[in-house]
Image (cartoon, rainbow, N blue to C red):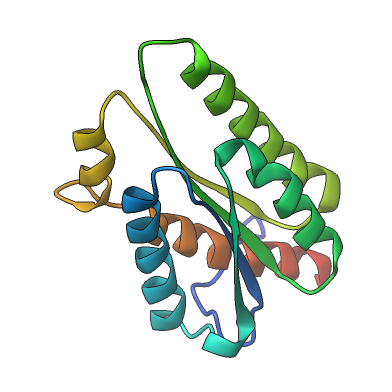
Length: 157
């Protein structure tokens, strides 16, 4: 029987940073609310959660990396909303945010969670930020807890 490694959904004692894009704040504030509620529901103490606001999703990776490298956090959650418009700006911002956030986790070893909505329109974004499609902020918080616990279990095995 192989040794199965998995992360538990127990946030007690975890320190989590949440980086939130201010652009499309009507959506990102809902993502943040979902993330905070979920972190607290799974036992992360309010005093162990830090929230950093950045101008937009493009700026998420640099602040996430700074937080991850500080040694103060077990995981970093990145929240944003990139909504397609009439220009190619959407593709550039979504791509840079995605690849940048991914690199942060790989380069630092701190789980860095991609909680950025990439939608065609505002209705889709609202639906994914607490509407009929759930709340991606909440999903990202669960991923942050589970991945942080998995990394911890691997390091102490």
